[in-house]
Image 1 (cartoon, rainbow, N blue to C red):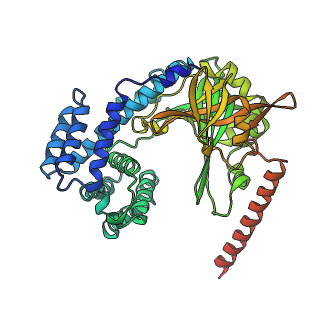
Image 2: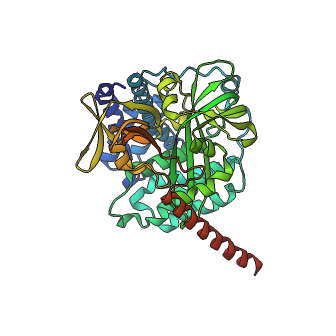
Length: 473
């Protein structure tokens, strides 16, 4: 991989992010009665999208905001402009990564499902739950007027009846979950006037995404049909929350018809009690996806008509998969990874934080700078994010520091590219040994892993017994 390309500045990136940062700062105090600095920040956002199809609408919205007379359609236009700028940053960074690793760029969508989406505009039928979406949009616009410093429990509680009405409806549940989580964060921070620190970028991200998802047709699920062929896992990314856990398997898919290999993902999630941690997480996930066992055993999987989205996410169905031949992730990475194409990213998902590109690194020197691990790639530094490595596996910062090859996810954070290791090769007693973050996914004989699994089993058994007693009362 060419580390020099990752270090070179990306043209226009700083300017785009500066416009977004200024607008996000304007949301802190609110846009009901904007001051000169806030009006200038909104005008800067409009200037940043001048010459694009959004230009006229965003310029009008900026003028209305400056006059304190912005309506819902104006806030939607500003959120769209912000999303477009971050989308352009995402695209520029993704292109730079493709150039650095020598990977083919994503091809234009040509599937029948994609063609159907483009030829069937969202206005062809009334939006499901339009009244609830309008209510959500109204609440989000009120937030923009009050600003993060102006939130209180009364204003945040306005989301509760909307979320309650949306959650039972499967077609609205995705948006309801986002609104619910956002409102919970705001409620935990009330009153906003006393906050020592406002999470400016995060709340602006949540606000703009939620607002755009209330626009009719914005949350249409796109399907790319199904795929048949061989799945070669590369590694597992585990994301843990106090009440939920998700494992996302990154893999290379080889179509049975001999087509070009593709980068795909397969995810599984489960609710969890906060007492289940470490290797015990796999007990909650294993029954939901057989792929985790294949990852742990170092095997491929044969897929038969497995549903997949246009963004490359497999809709996993155990009935459509069976274990295949042994497949070493490092062999897959060395032979197939650079030729595998990535799927196009959905418009609303084009955001720098969503970048997670599988890469293979070899021939680097690991060193620590101010307590932070980094790889030296032919004189170019690449930061390593060891905080993302899960406790539910044997991969440790020490193993990464002693490695000579790494399969990981290339991400972008805080103005620089960073690497999240998924697996490393290191030398132990003159032998090359591979250490994988997902090695315990299908079970383990490792002493630490066995202890964690036993503790999780005991915790789950106690919780089930208590739940049973409550239900019997």
